[in-house]
Image: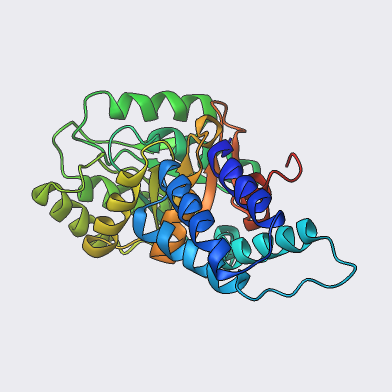
Length: 303
């Protein structure tokens, strides 16, 4: 997990730790570091900005007489990564649910086909149910064949009520009915699925915008596949412009041997990763924590 980024930072640390920290020494080393970031799914713009951040920090860095340069560089890397990823963990969903005075708390999920959106919804439903919240799931993906059946299967396993219409029905109507039912039954949370829309499809984007405008959800999450590389940032950019969202759910992290997506989307959009999906079971879903990602990148610890 995140092996590519881990190696890139390790190589940079090794190169810097064996020579004087001067501008002449840094140029070639940081250029190689920048290329390694790009190879590991960090966008070119973000890689350049990160490289420049490290150049500013390292130029003229004074090492104390009794300090080990390896430890100094390690601390610098950790502090800079924490700064770059400062938004991760800043969105507390459970606090927001508790703070809302009137039920239900409504969450809309965005994301294109194949990101693991349906599974992420089921995993979050499982986590919320464990915290004793009552739930309704709205099958708002009335476009893709099998989408409703997938959510029905998860809902049966989890013992959660769903609201569905026929395929081809208005997603907004499905979402509206789910919110009305939840209000009537005093349900805590409504989770609204949407079609896995290609981010460049004008009609589908308009439908999504309509749903958000009518329903006025309390939270909108964009589900991003960590294996999609630079395309994940392009998705984030377009969805931010067209629909808007509060944060990310990053999926398939267990299979991601590069790790650059986490850096790119948070640094460039300034939106937080809220949850991380890192396996196939319902339990393989965690609240995103900055320290966890930083340690994975730097190769510190197992958690």
